[in-house]
Length: 378
Ligand SMILES: *Cc1c(COP(=O)(O)O)cnc(C)c1O
Image (cartoon, rainbow, N blue to C red):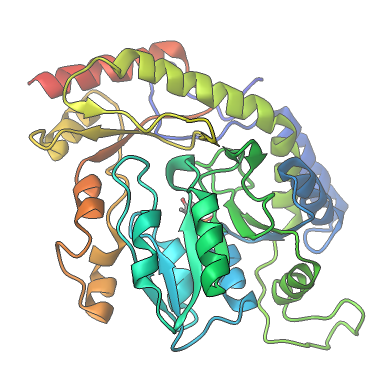
């Protein structure tokens, strides 16, 4: 696969997409058609995505964040409601709860999987709890069996944020095919991209119909164009993005396979290095979809210094992810403070995302690892 967004041999990028002539041609074709929104590409991308994921329905959106917001809306979650979720995530998975004036109730994470600690959820359930919003962080599936049991016992809705987990499987089935509202995202650093874009999958026809309406200004397909049945949004995906998505989806199996190879190469170089811990391996029921390559530095290592040294060697890294509850406006709104979620904070202070992308050359992985080992030593 020949990349059109070329990366110079001596340059290391954090997570560029892989775009080819196919994407170029597809986008130009849409441009020349003049139909830039509400057209056949978005419909096709939805159908193909549902088929690839194994869900009955899929709704394309303008981003992962707008997809998450639509899910919260579609479930009727609002003021006074509580939604249980993780503080170790990209901020959008908690913000979407705030958009509807509901309250995110954080539960600390499991230090191995870095996902919400499923054994600590039950004690946080109250009469106000309406839903659990799961995040499959770094592409590693949450233990869905335990979550389903809880959701059933307490009659809770589920939203799965699988924005980092496209292609990850639980008990051999892809995330997004289990029937719950599940969100994917196509920002350029994800496993595949539509520039900006997102997708919601569900197996529930009523939910699907509602989402299709909400994403498109609350319109009702069977009614007139300027008839609005619900308070809706313009969260639609555009045709250029959908055309990109169709081409990327065709290559997704290859992308995922390659990303796993790159990750395993990293693992191989780093597995015996002291001062770092690698991400949790797959087990009998869970397989990770590789989104980022993240290492955890030991406590005594100064992460800032390591990042600075790598940067000096031309290697970009990111301290991914900060704890959501310690973001300034969460602290202001909810009076969160340090030590509220100690496992999450501890992990947040030690995680480091290294350059990682589809098609990353072996020499570059080697170069990053060599520099990382050097930075850890000094
Ligand atoms: C990327 C991401 C999103 C959505 O991101 P957008 O940039 O809005 O597409 C949501 N949740 C998580 C965990 C993510 O990593």
